[in-house]
Image 1 (cartoon, rainbow, N blue to C red):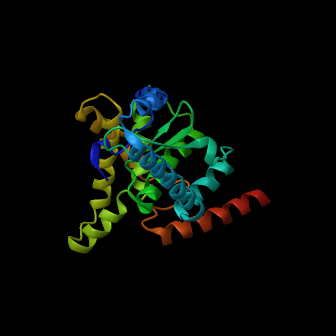
Image 2: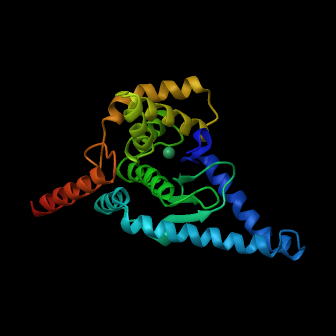
Length: 246
Ligand SMILES: [Zn+2]
Protein backbone atom coordinates (compact mmCIF):
# COMPACT_ATOMS: atom_id res chain seq x y z
CA UNK A 1 0.00 0.00 0.00
CA UNK A 2 1.27 3.39 -0.85
CA UNK A 3 0.98 5.66 2.14
CA UNK A 4 -0.72 9.05 2.12
CA UNK A 5 -2.12 8.81 -1.36
CA UNK A 6 -3.52 5.35 -0.71
CA UNK A 7 -7.12 6.32 -0.90
CA UNK A 8 -9.57 8.90 -1.96
CA UNK A 9 -11.72 9.01 1.15
CA UNK A 10 -15.19 10.45 1.62
CA UNK A 11 -15.37 14.13 0.82
CA UNK A 12 -16.32 16.90 -1.56
CA UNK A 13 -12.90 16.94 -3.22
CA UNK A 14 -13.57 13.37 -4.25
CA UNK A 15 -16.79 14.36 -6.05
CA UNK A 16 -14.86 17.02 -7.92
CA UNK A 17 -12.24 14.48 -8.93
CA UNK A 18 -14.95 12.16 -10.19
CA UNK A 19 -16.48 14.90 -12.32
CA UNK A 20 -13.09 15.71 -13.79
CA UNK A 21 -12.59 12.10 -14.72
CA UNK A 22 -15.98 11.89 -16.39
CA UNK A 23 -15.10 14.97 -18.43
CA UNK A 24 -11.83 13.29 -19.37
CA UNK A 25 -13.78 10.23 -20.59
CA UNK A 26 -15.97 12.45 -22.76
CA UNK A 27 -13.01 13.96 -24.56
CA UNK A 28 -11.29 10.62 -24.86
CA UNK A 29 -12.81 9.65 -28.30
CA UNK A 30 -11.67 12.97 -29.82
CA UNK A 31 -8.14 12.31 -28.64
CA UNK A 32 -8.35 8.90 -30.28
CA UNK A 33 -9.56 10.48 -33.54
CA UNK A 34 -6.42 12.62 -33.50
CA UNK A 35 -4.47 9.40 -33.37
CA UNK A 36 -2.54 10.40 -30.23
CA UNK A 37 -3.12 7.59 -27.72
CA UNK A 38 -3.35 4.86 -30.36
CA UNK A 39 -4.85 1.39 -30.41
CA UNK A 40 -2.57 0.03 -27.71
CA UNK A 41 -3.87 2.53 -25.22
CA UNK A 42 -7.49 1.66 -26.06
CA UNK A 43 -7.00 -2.08 -25.63
CA UNK A 44 -5.04 -1.67 -22.39
CA UNK A 45 -7.79 0.60 -21.06
CA UNK A 46 -10.43 -2.04 -21.63
CA UNK A 47 -8.19 -4.77 -20.29
CA UNK A 48 -7.62 -2.97 -16.99
CA UNK A 49 -11.35 -2.26 -16.64
CA UNK A 50 -12.26 -5.87 -17.35
CA UNK A 51 -9.57 -7.09 -14.98
CA UNK A 52 -10.92 -4.77 -12.30
CA UNK A 53 -14.47 -6.08 -12.83
CA UNK A 54 -13.31 -9.70 -12.65
CA UNK A 55 -11.28 -9.16 -9.49
CA UNK A 56 -14.22 -7.31 -7.93
CA UNK A 57 -16.56 -10.19 -8.74
CA UNK A 58 -14.17 -12.68 -7.14
CA UNK A 59 -13.79 -10.46 -4.06
CA UNK A 60 -17.57 -10.13 -3.64
CA UNK A 61 -18.16 -13.85 -4.02
CA UNK A 62 -15.28 -15.33 -2.06
CA UNK A 63 -13.65 -12.94 0.42
CA UNK A 64 -14.91 -13.59 3.98
CA UNK A 65 -14.34 -9.97 5.16
CA UNK A 66 -16.39 -8.66 2.24
CA UNK A 67 -19.12 -11.31 2.55
CA UNK A 68 -19.62 -10.39 6.21
CA UNK A 69 -19.75 -6.67 5.45
CA UNK A 70 -22.25 -7.24 2.61
CA UNK A 71 -24.47 -9.33 4.94
CA UNK A 72 -24.23 -6.67 7.65
CA UNK A 73 -25.14 -3.90 5.19
CA UNK A 74 -28.14 -5.89 4.00
CA UNK A 75 -29.15 -6.53 7.61
CA UNK A 76 -29.00 -2.76 8.27
CA UNK A 77 -31.20 -2.01 5.26
CA UNK A 78 -28.39 -0.95 2.90
CA UNK A 79 -28.19 -3.85 0.44
CA UNK A 80 -25.19 -3.43 -1.87
CA UNK A 81 -25.59 -3.85 -5.61
CA UNK A 82 -22.46 -4.55 -7.69
CA UNK A 83 -23.57 -2.48 -10.69
CA UNK A 84 -24.97 0.42 -8.68
CA UNK A 85 -22.46 0.77 -5.84
CA UNK A 86 -19.08 -0.02 -7.42
CA UNK A 87 -17.23 1.74 -10.19
CA UNK A 88 -13.88 0.71 -11.72
CA UNK A 89 -12.10 3.86 -12.91
CA UNK A 90 -8.66 5.27 -13.60
CA UNK A 91 -7.50 7.51 -10.75
CA UNK A 92 -4.82 10.10 -10.22
CA UNK A 93 -1.62 9.38 -8.28
CA UNK A 94 -1.33 6.31 -6.08
CA UNK A 95 -5.00 6.32 -5.04
CA UNK A 96 -6.42 2.79 -4.72
CA UNK A 97 -10.06 3.53 -4.02
CA UNK A 98 -12.58 5.74 -2.28
CA UNK A 99 -16.07 5.96 -0.88
CA UNK A 100 -18.16 8.76 -2.37
CA UNK A 101 -20.66 9.55 0.39
CA UNK A 102 -22.74 11.78 -1.90
CA UNK A 103 -23.59 8.89 -4.24
CA UNK A 104 -22.93 5.97 -1.82
CA UNK A 105 -20.57 4.60 -4.44
CA UNK A 106 -17.22 2.85 -4.00
CA UNK A 107 -14.63 3.83 -6.59
CA UNK A 108 -11.99 1.22 -7.40
CA UNK A 109 -8.86 2.55 -9.09
CA UNK A 110 -8.30 0.05 -11.89
CA UNK A 111 -4.91 1.56 -12.77
CA UNK A 112 -3.55 1.18 -9.23
CA UNK A 113 -5.08 -2.01 -7.81
CA UNK A 114 -2.26 -4.47 -8.32
CA UNK A 115 -3.73 -7.91 -7.65
CA UNK A 116 -6.55 -9.90 -6.06
CA UNK A 117 -5.39 -9.49 -2.45
CA UNK A 118 -4.99 -5.73 -2.97
CA UNK A 119 -8.55 -5.64 -4.40
CA UNK A 120 -9.79 -7.58 -1.34
CA UNK A 121 -8.25 -5.06 1.05
CA UNK A 122 -9.46 -1.98 -0.87
CA UNK A 123 -13.05 -3.28 -1.12
CA UNK A 124 -13.04 -4.24 2.58
CA UNK A 125 -11.64 -0.86 3.63
CA UNK A 126 -14.21 1.08 1.59
CA UNK A 127 -17.08 -1.17 2.71
CA UNK A 128 -16.24 -0.31 6.36
CA UNK A 129 -16.85 3.35 5.40
CA UNK A 130 -20.06 2.37 3.59
CA UNK A 131 -21.16 0.36 6.65
CA UNK A 132 -20.51 3.36 8.94
CA UNK A 133 -22.38 5.59 6.48
CA UNK A 134 -25.32 3.18 6.59
CA UNK A 135 -25.57 2.56 10.33
CA UNK A 136 -24.89 6.06 11.66
CA UNK A 137 -25.44 9.61 10.62
CA UNK A 138 -21.85 10.37 9.70
CA UNK A 139 -20.93 14.02 9.18
CA UNK A 140 -18.06 13.27 6.79
CA UNK A 141 -17.58 16.91 5.85
CA UNK A 142 -18.38 18.86 9.02
CA UNK A 143 -16.99 16.75 11.87
CA UNK A 144 -13.39 15.64 11.44
CA UNK A 145 -13.76 13.19 14.34
CA UNK A 146 -16.42 11.24 12.40
CA UNK A 147 -14.05 10.80 9.45
CA UNK A 148 -11.20 9.95 11.87
CA UNK A 149 -13.32 7.29 13.57
CA UNK A 150 -14.25 5.60 10.31
CA UNK A 151 -10.62 5.68 9.11
CA UNK A 152 -9.46 4.07 12.38
CA UNK A 153 -12.10 1.36 11.97
CA UNK A 154 -11.28 0.80 8.27
CA UNK A 155 -7.55 0.47 8.99
CA UNK A 156 -8.18 -1.77 11.99
CA UNK A 157 -10.72 -4.13 10.40
CA UNK A 158 -9.74 -4.35 6.72
CA UNK A 159 -6.45 -6.18 7.13
CA UNK A 160 -4.54 -3.04 6.02
CA UNK A 161 -2.31 -3.52 9.05
CA UNK A 162 -2.47 -7.27 9.46
CA UNK A 163 0.12 -8.34 6.90
CA UNK A 164 2.62 -5.83 8.20
CA UNK A 165 1.62 -6.84 11.70
CA UNK A 166 2.42 -10.49 11.02
CA UNK A 167 5.87 -9.63 9.71
CA UNK A 168 6.63 -7.38 12.67
CA UNK A 169 5.36 -9.96 15.16
CA UNK A 170 7.55 -12.57 13.56
CA UNK A 171 10.68 -10.44 13.42
CA UNK A 172 10.37 -7.94 16.25
CA UNK A 173 7.64 -9.15 18.58
CA UNK A 174 6.11 -5.71 18.90
CA UNK A 175 2.71 -6.16 20.50
CA UNK A 176 1.74 -2.55 20.05
CA UNK A 177 2.57 -2.52 16.37
CA UNK A 178 -1.00 -3.09 15.23
CA UNK A 179 -2.27 -0.05 17.15
CA UNK A 180 0.59 2.10 15.86
CA UNK A 181 -0.06 0.95 12.28
CA UNK A 182 -3.81 1.67 12.56
CA UNK A 183 -3.18 5.14 14.01
CA UNK A 184 -0.59 6.04 11.35
CA UNK A 185 -2.74 4.80 8.49
CA UNK A 186 -5.83 6.62 9.74
CA UNK A 187 -3.83 9.88 9.89
CA UNK A 188 -2.46 9.35 6.36
CA UNK A 189 -5.94 8.54 5.01
CA UNK A 190 -7.33 11.78 6.47
CA UNK A 191 -4.43 13.82 5.08
CA UNK A 192 -5.07 12.29 1.62
CA UNK A 193 -8.58 13.77 1.52
CA UNK A 194 -8.47 16.86 3.76
CA UNK A 195 -6.33 19.94 3.36
CA UNK A 196 -5.33 20.13 7.04
CA UNK A 197 -2.09 19.95 9.00
CA UNK A 198 -0.69 16.67 10.29
CA UNK A 199 -1.11 17.93 13.87
CA UNK A 200 -4.85 18.54 13.39
CA UNK A 201 -5.30 15.07 11.84
CA UNK A 202 -3.31 13.45 14.69
CA UNK A 203 -5.41 15.26 17.29
CA UNK A 204 -8.68 14.09 15.69
CA UNK A 205 -7.46 10.48 15.52
CA UNK A 206 -6.16 10.53 19.12
CA UNK A 207 -9.48 11.93 20.41
CA UNK A 208 -11.51 9.07 18.96
CA UNK A 209 -8.89 6.32 18.90
CA UNK A 210 -9.78 4.30 21.98
CA UNK A 211 -13.52 4.01 21.36
CA UNK A 212 -13.23 3.55 17.58
CA UNK A 213 -10.33 1.08 17.78
CA UNK A 214 -12.45 -1.03 20.15
CA UNK A 215 -15.57 -0.82 17.97
CA UNK A 216 -15.25 -4.01 15.90
CA UNK A 217 -18.72 -4.02 14.34
CA UNK A 218 -19.80 -5.94 12.35
CA UNK A 219 -16.86 -8.33 12.90
CA UNK A 220 -17.15 -8.65 16.69
CA UNK A 221 -13.34 -8.98 16.82
CA UNK A 222 -10.27 -7.78 14.95
CA UNK A 223 -10.11 -10.13 11.94
CA UNK A 224 -6.35 -10.61 11.71
CA UNK A 225 -6.65 -13.08 8.85
CA UNK A 226 -9.20 -14.85 6.65
CA UNK A 227 -9.78 -17.60 9.22
CA UNK A 228 -10.75 -14.99 11.85
CA UNK A 229 -12.96 -13.31 9.24
CA UNK A 230 -14.68 -16.63 8.46
CA UNK A 231 -15.38 -17.20 12.18
CA UNK A 232 -16.66 -13.64 12.47
CA UNK A 233 -18.95 -14.22 9.48
CA UNK A 234 -20.31 -17.43 11.01
CA UNK A 235 -20.91 -15.69 14.35
CA UNK A 236 -22.66 -12.83 12.59
CA UNK A 237 -24.94 -15.25 10.72
CA UNK A 238 -25.79 -17.02 13.99
CA UNK A 239 -26.43 -13.71 15.74
CA UNK A 240 -28.62 -12.65 12.81
CA UNK A 241 -30.63 -15.88 13.04
CA UNK A 242 -30.95 -15.51 16.82
CA UNK A 243 -32.33 -11.97 16.61
CA UNK A 244 -34.66 -12.77 13.73
CA UNK A 245 -36.18 -15.59 15.85
CA UNK A 246 -37.02 -13.36 18.82
ZN1 LIG B 1 -10.55 5.22 4.29
